[in-house]
Length: 112
Image 1 (cartoon, one colour):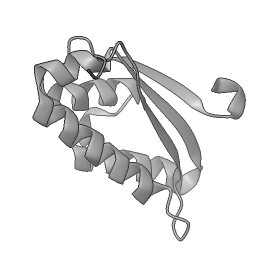
Image 2 (cartoon, helix red, strand yellow):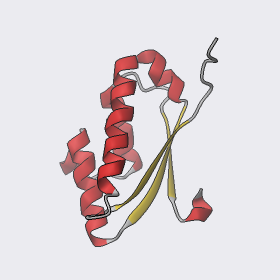
Image 3 (cartoon, helix red, strand yellow):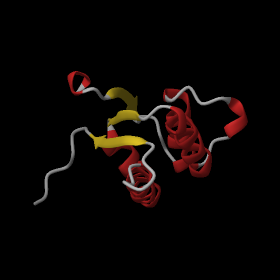
């Protein structure tokens, strides 16, 4: 992925047990200043401000993602939905800020 021009951020979510833990991990990975806080709006604001001056291209790889799913199904599904919507919003062709690609990897249980 790095060869494609994307900055790759890997976030191990093996110890994430709730949505707030994921928000904090994203903040650390993005080197978010403290004044933004740990919530989805703060993440959106941070990426918008960075993209207003220079378009960015980021691939976020959430490793051990099934651990978060097992710990909090609702929090996991909600976070995936919010991040997907954020990705679409920030890459809007009318007001592009950048490109946000999301990957959830790990050993997923097989469907039987």
